[in-house]
Image (tube, rainbow, N blue to C red; front, side, top):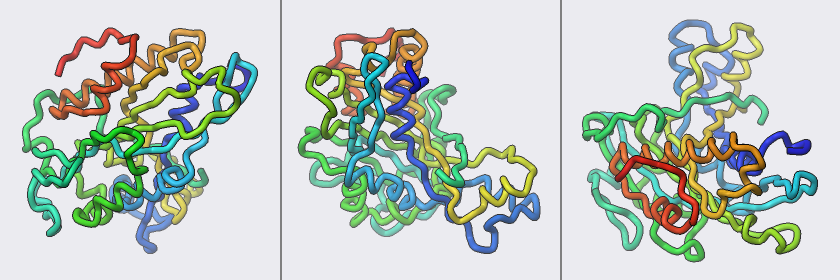
Length: 306
């Protein structure tokens, strides 16, 4: 696709993939002196506050996504992230803070009962090999969950929404990813905030997206043996990428986003299948997911049912 070498959908996924800063204790930075050090650093030293920090600028200004029109003209579209849904499970016997001792917390409107130094990451929340019909013993202790139902125009951008929710649920900032169950996850709704250039492609540029991310990223265990790579991973400015393991689009199943070939379209379908499978696996009825699926004319042949 011209010099971009990727479809517009792939450009969107790449541009909206957060890079979360790692925070190693000073005594371990750049040090892999023992097997114990390697094992401890395979778990990304992240507090949940570090996740939200990665989205702070995007929540304020929007994230720029480079796109191509007719393979030749390049433009920029901006998207704002919004919290769509989240479930945080702590590991068994994990002590919850005083703000959320119950798994059925509720609020007035949205809580539901019930690149320097960057490191590539694997997210534990994967829809490719799910355990069907998980019990509490698998999931862990439900610390917090949220399912947005407001109209997009009434929503608060991601980091501001998290800050509001964290006033009562302090673990949204203080919990460490190492304390979470591998089934902890969030979904982000991405809505365009303005378009460049003209309105000729207004429908294509108005496409919205849902992305799904695990909250327990780990650094791959197989690390290069050279000292430079190790120092990079353990350095104070190292980051870990948190790609989407699932994605759904509204008004994005077309040639503008997928390109002329079938490869990207197949990937879009696979990511939607992964999101659907994930929601089925954990038994979560995601309002935005159902809205997106019900309001677009083209439906990939997804066979799973919730």
